[in-house]
Length: 353
View 1 (tube, one colour):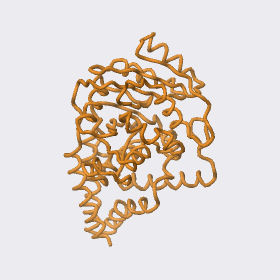
View 2 (spheres, helix red, strand yellow):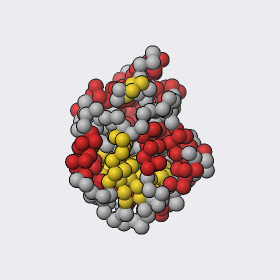
View 3 (cartoon, helix red, strand yellow):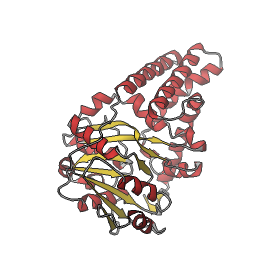
View 4 (spheres, one colour):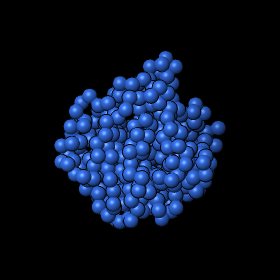
C-alpha cells in the first residue's frame, strides 16, 4: 500500500500547488456597498484594543461597527469604549442571556446581525483576535460583489508562536490540499465548504433567507456550518487569500492551543483522521525502514506543506519537515477532544459546550 499512498500524497501536493495559483486575492481599495462590521467579544480585554483600532481605521468603505459584549468579566467593554473615544460609527451593546440550546458565539452573532442597520447590504463578522489592514473590509466586500457570491471568507495570516507552529499551519494547508477551490466557490454542495469566522462577509439577503445564525445555533464550528446552510439554501461562497488583509494569533501558548482545539476537533470525522495518518504518517514510517516509495511519499507531504506555507505567509522550513509529526499530533488532539465530549467535559470561556 505504501506506493499507492505515496502516489496519492504526490497528487495532493500537485493539487495544493494548483490551488495556490488559483486562490483569489482581494486587492480593491474601495467599495460603494454599505457594510455593518460585527464584532462579538467575551473576555477579550487583552486583545480587543488593536482589533477595534484597526476597524476604526478602515478606508474606502461606508461602514458602521457594532460590538457586542457577551458577558465579559475582565473589562472588555471598558477597553472598547476607551479605544472608540466616542466615534459615532461604533456602537457597543450588552449581550442578552444565553438561551437554552444555543452556543455562545452563534447567539452573539445573531444579536449583532439583529442590531445591524437595515440599510447595510453586507455583514462582515470579525473576531477580537484579528487585526485588519486598512483596506481589508473594502477589499473583501468588493470581491464578494465582483464574484456575485453570497459569502466570502478571506483566511487571515496565522501567527503561531512556539510549539503552536506544529499545528496551526495545518488550517490553511488542509483546504488548499483537499478542497477544489474554484469548484467549491460555485458549487451548492454543502460538503464543499470552507470558511473562517475570524473574517467573514455575507450578503444580508442571503443571511436572512436561511434565518441567520439561528440556522447554526448549536454548531461549535459555526462559520463552516453557516456556509453549508447557505449552500443548502441555494447560495454560494468560499475562501480567498486574506494574508495581506488580516493577521491573527489564535493562541499564545501550547496549553491554550490544546484547550482551543479540544472544543472543536471532535467534529473531524474519524475516516478523515485515518486518511491523514495513512497519507502522511505511514509513508515516512516506511521510509525509516528503507522504503524508497515511503521516502517519496514523505517528500510529497513536505512539498505540499511548503507550497501552502509560502502562499499563506507561514514559515515553510523547518516546519514542513515535521509534517508527519504535525498530523500525528492533530490525531492525538482529535482523540482528546472526542474523549472530553463523551465525558461531557467540553467548555469554552466558562461555558459548557
